[in-house]
Length: 360
Image (cartoon, rainbow, N blue to C red; front, side, top):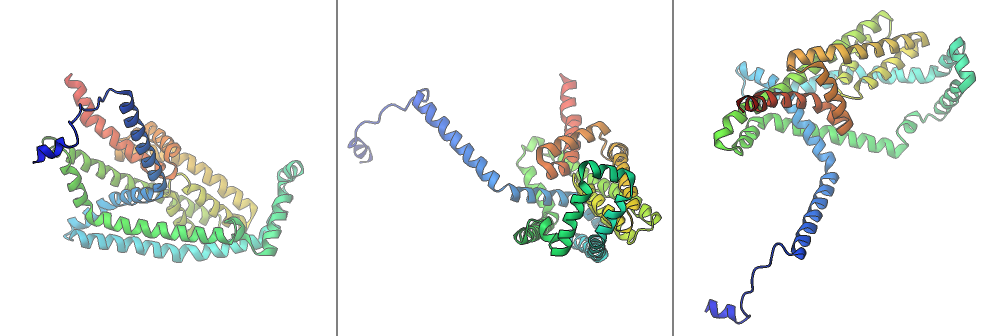
């Protein structure tokens, strides 16, 4: 009956030729449309992927500390709780020690800004530059407008709507990263186990060992960044104390947090520290600005390459090139991931590519 039913509508024709130009053009157009749709979808959700990537990176970076607690007899859930409590305690301490001094020093700087500008006018170099470019006159005019209208914050963030968007976006991103990092830390072994099962059974063990080594290098990188940030905080804290700046310990702690942020961290730290110094005197502001710039150059070209070479077995030149390329490609996220990705690539080259080249 099924055969008779099929013949009611005629005989089945020959299969459509896949070499026909119409068939090829239709499939090519369909593939291009699917690729374009997928690209736009990924672009629309790029911020979400960035948050996921940053959260996964932080979870991998904190994994060695979790393993340390596990080695002391704690279960992984309890170790994750201890790590989360430690991070939240640091954030709370940071907020208590840093935010009030920053607010008070900023208000003091804005209030005393006209007097500081007048002091700069007494300097022969600044007076000569002002005669040529008039930057002190412009700065004084804008400062007086900000003080009289009390709209410095609104102007800096683009108005009331800009302030609201900045606060909401920052809060949402912070909470999302915190929650995702917590889930990644708790389930990282399960995630890696599922990922390793995708590999062929004959290569699964080797892939798992190389991947575990890559995760360990990410953790080492995070530890190295903490050490680098600590050195920067120690330098600024001691230098601020030498210059008799207020809140020297708080400034050092603020620089520690800023130094953990790639690409823009030191710019933020230098700006805040310099503003605090300028609130005391223009001379102190210029001194600490020059000292911060010099230290940053020493850190970029001496401290960071040496620490990365010792802890991650990455040559200093590769560290600098990786940071530059990552920053140009993905900005802040690229700068965050550049060095551990370079370490992973070097590990794969040493363990996979070079042995194959030796056997041929």
